[in-house]
Image 1 (tube, rainbow, N blue to C red):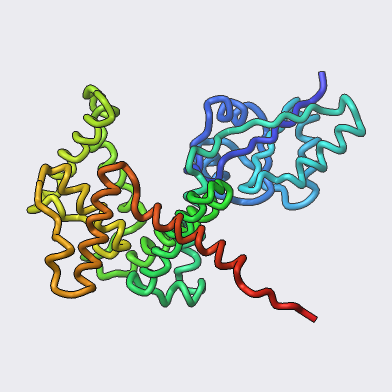
Image 2: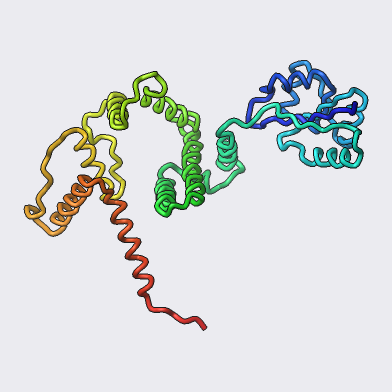
Length: 327
């Protein structure tokens, strides 16, 4: 029976020592070698397992240990020690029967693990010694970038380009992470972090989806939406159904949102008459508001409709421009 070499790989994104039962059994049953000290090595030693650090000749040391004890474990570093794995694998391929190489996962990246990487990278960029530009920003100086990145994501959605959407959502996430990291520098009584952002979001989702988390009856989509609004109103304790509307959004979208909120609340207030307005700008505003109301009644999005028409006209304008010849 040939010797056995176990390459034990673990997730660097989980707490050190959080390993499967099979991984612990393997660590306790054979000599354990590794290439460098790490938090994982410290945790394994704390559990009573001896770990030997091999700084040179790791392949030979691993093969010797496997030959002497039948099994040897290599506790891989955060990068998986791919160079060592290739070296040992090539040697075993040239010498069949010398030993068997087994890859064992002691832990796996959980869903969303790369978010932890993103938080770590942003922390480094916004900390002393990081990126001076990011460290110089404030919530106010970044406000325009957040809007711009959201519009670029909207463009990708409108174009049906899911690859572009993935990238643009990453840019939106960058803004969220940077705002959260900068908030850690606020005075102590105002300070918050990305964990506070995520925690608030989780609590909100759980509260507003009792049909998922509390065993409530789901009902129809309309009933779910109505229940969401009831819970939201109870949480916010708003004096008006219009409270909470983002007033800085584009005018057509703002008008549609205001009319939608009023309609849901059953507020039957007549729209301003264009003919009764005192000046051309007011008449134009009342006319546009009436068009938004008409769009809402027919289930159309006025912002998207005007955007589509404008982009179509942009294409026509480009084709109508005089061609310039290049020499």
